[in-house]
Length: 347
Image 1: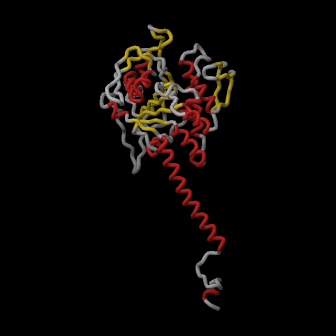
Image 2 (image 1 turned 30 degrees about the vertical axis):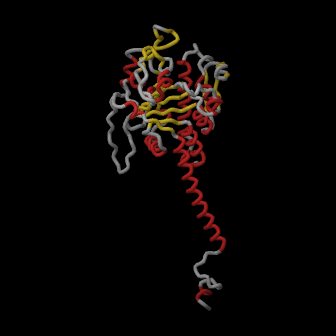
Image 3 (image 1 turned 120 degrees about the horizontal axis):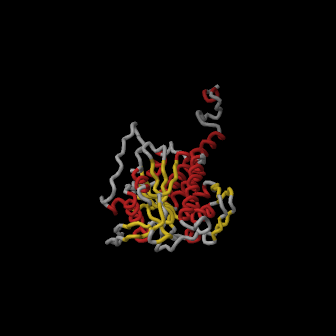
């Protein structure tokens, strides 16, 4: 008996795998190569989705001071300091999807929704403060990308800042109103919001009154409803079919949507379902504009990982205290000193 026969290889092919195992090995190797290529493509695709604007470079140093960060312990620490983020929902009609969802004209988009998200030190609790878009403010002079600056304006609506000066002016106006440094800026357009809701399987909301708003094309009876992305967007925009038709009633609906979205994000099993994770990530980044401190996938992931201890039940939603404006009962102004005390608690 030869050595090959002793090894059970009468054909003299020592060390060769049986044919089925070799095929399986080649298939696995091919799948890994394709998987790595697909992962690389997905990363580049998501990274390119994000639009960045240089808020810090545009505004310079004439701004409220940053909060002092406390270093974290550990070899690769995640950031844990307090953070303030200005989050805007814009009604831009840039792109076909936004046009179909009823955005404003592409040359004069406005901030349809404005929230200051404050993350406490440790990032296990958050406060979301809504600013009514009808709030009358002193809009400061804002630098323009083309050079020069806008003129200051007294008694201007808060949401006009984005319209006349873009993201940088929205941030500068928010900082002027609140005295709070906005560490980051996030803007989501209509299509991005609707896609996110759909990627998460819709949202559940409960309304305490019937909603009939022909302008937002939303008609709901009082009660609990499951909404897809388009109807959730209509709910976030509706104002004429509820309460007195002011922005305050709409803010309550928006805060309800934020709560449900946070619950769905935390319970979506994203880490165990790569396909679902990609759908949500694609939806989040597709309509996203950020400051240059968050305009890459790595930076957004780092921010997300730092919020691992933040759950929906630890998020408080409030509205900036306001009263009717003396000059116009259809507008509001900050109610002092309550508004100043609220903003001071976020510094």
